[in-house]
Length: 128
Image (cartoon, rainbow, N blue to C red; front, side, top):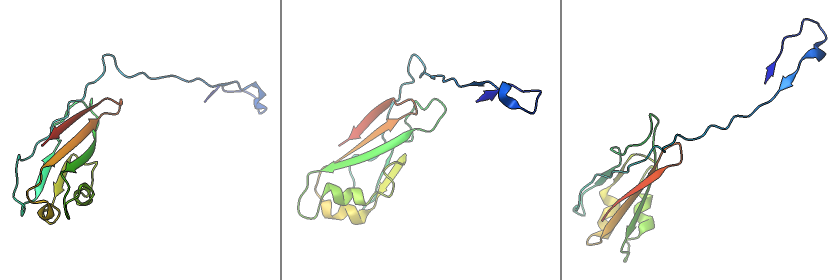
């Protein structure tokens, strides 16, 4: 809100102007490239560490992350159980400790991450 200054105590001479400016995303768009790093196999007594910190496309700002997992479920091995073992699914790096992995010995785990920038552009990476 911008007001003109008035010389008088009675400020009825103030004019109010309200304007809106739409700020567009850059063209061409800033592309996001998701990059996931982690082991291709682990032992059931090992922790699983995955990282998407090498992802790019933030245009000088922080990227956002969304991790998900899937597994061929059996007995006490469930996707929900594994996801419960991740402290922060929006961090660039995640660690799944062995206590969550042990019930899934012999299973095939797939990990997915979607990386986004503040313009709404996103990219996904996965590992099996």
